[in-house]
Length: 175
Image (cartoon, rainbow, N blue to C red; front, side):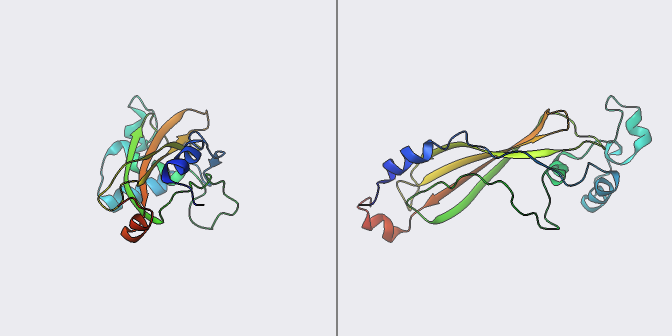
């Protein structure tokens, strides 16, 4: 007999706190990618572009634009990495996925020369009704980015949901 959504939730919640091993970025934080990113986004902040200016600030070094930090963490997309650690799968009654939000929190400046690593963690799993499915599964995952000293420099928190089709809801008697 198939498990109910509530029984599946009990099993899924055992995964909260599961995390991957850290994966170090393929390259250190470098001037040229920062320069290209700033030119592409029309960001002329001298703290990101001018080493002489940056030396006179409290940072003493060029700082990576916050939204670019994740680009230096992890293996990148090319060449394709193999055998990357993955979070355990969350088993749910539905098979329709929606990525809802990603929130960023930047905790420390990332400077040229830093070596970043990233790990992922399951932060929360719960059931919350949506119009299509009264027992939709919501999953919150985090990516934690650290520097070469082990300091957390940034976190992202992603909220996604998985739901059943209206036909699946009706067949389960949850309509």
